View 1 (tube, one colour):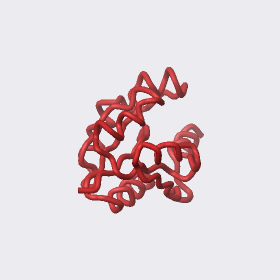
View 2 (cartoon, helix red, strand yellow):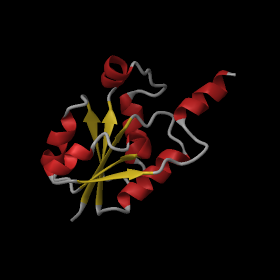
View 3 (cartoon, rainbow, N blue to C red):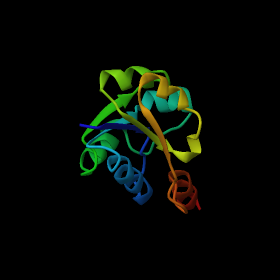
View 4 (cartoon, one colour):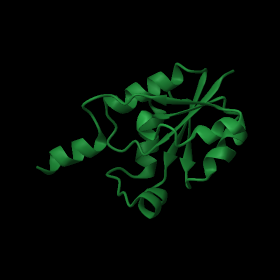
Length: 130
């Protein structure tokens, strides 16, 4: 079984997120999503989510492409996640291109997928603020 992992906040879930999750799942047989906790988002990213971690987790678990959701609590956990969850493929959006190439040393293929044009959580929040 080929296992894939991706990371993200997945706040205000939209079709760009679904597109990313579908393409990530197509790279393997089992998709693990490491979902940023509220504390991690605030303390490390200075990002406040609209939906709580538990609500974002509930939404992700309802998506047919997602097999498992785990908490992302630190930037450094990626190496251990690869080993703890027997990951073969590490997937991120191409806005992170090159940042995680070091994970190939851990035995995972690193794939950067193009982002879906014309949609982002940031843009949605800005549009709603108008």
